[in-house]
Length: 289
Image (cartoon, rainbow, N blue to C red; front, side, top):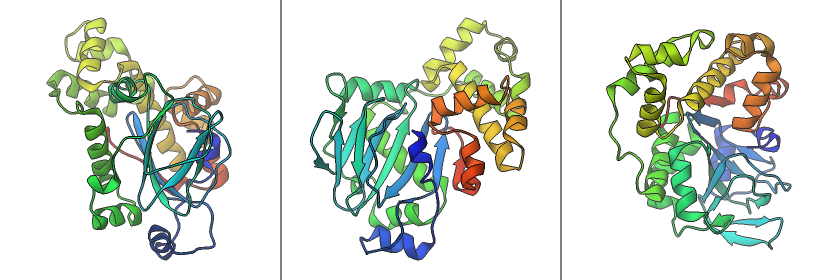
């Protein structure tokens, strides 16, 4: 995501959501639902906006919930789509076209992102899969996901979309050692996490642990730890800490380091939470299954 996207991370009242979701006219622009983030993935419902040209650090999936949206890259003309996959760092522009889109962002370090890139984006910057969001959710389920700030609803929808597109996600069983490492990371203050301690927790060498963790999660262990540090620091901001204090508690060297990593992963700066007063609209979730 870019800084541009973050400016629109806001939740509006249910009457507006209902009118927007069913194509009625409204006077507020633009609109997004709560912004959800898991380990390696993020999602948001987005509408009522013509974006400037911008780009994302992540692979982006767009699925329209009503009709069609318009899209173009810097080197192409406007075209209409019902769904689209966009390669990371492709400069593009989105016109929501009086409709509502579910937008999913995938960290390029994850296995699911690599699978989707290799399947659909080897020879092109974008790909339009022949899918409809109602393949994955009925109208009632989709309405609930739009109206309720409930991570489980959005996660279930996102998981079905990614499962369909990758055809491989979820096929590798878990490993109890990986589960123990994930639990240890979640329970340990970020300032005390070390690769050596995690390897000792499951009686493995550090290199073997890194290989095992990536095999069973599709995410490099260092990346998983980074996500956890960002989540921890973001939670501290949401609890009222200053950006600098949150950065230090999150295990970053300073607020600049936290800022750099936050922008790299999410495309937004920590200070923008405070500036826009959007803390309640950023929902940090457990790792997607």
